[in-house]
Image 1 (cartoon, rainbow, N blue to C red):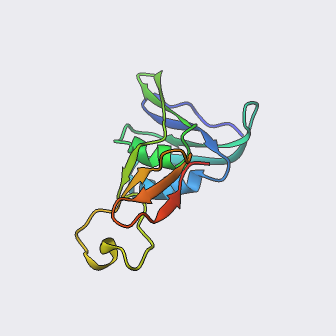
Image 2 (tube, helix red, strand yellow):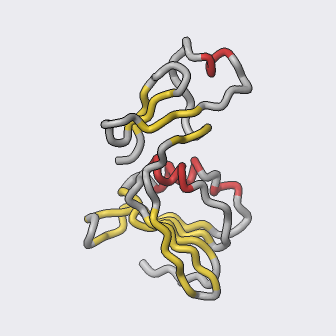
Image 3 (cartoon, one colour):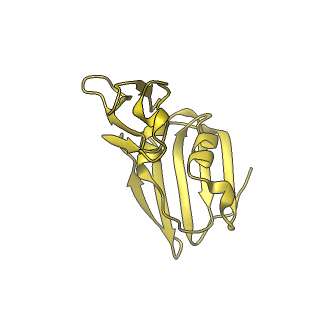
Length: 140
């Protein structure tokens, strides 16, 4: 399969296979007016299989969302045909990325409270609600 290169836009690469659609939904890419291409389960020497997303425009990307989904991906920002690579990292805190599922949490009863989770110490990719300590897993 061949896809044209882009002169201006964003390529999210090295996404764990099967996570591309999660990124598509979390970043609301379906609402964009520009072209968005998603490649699922593309061959990769490094990963075996991976997903890739190409966006034919430069938009604001929430790197915390990307890091929560898969901290090992890379983001290439392309301007005038030249790419600048940015690494994604596991964020220390996420805000309004996921919702707390604890029915007794204050976020369940108070509508205007942000859903904030902090990365647990000593537990890789596990986040805890700052209000009730409910855990949620991120990353791979």
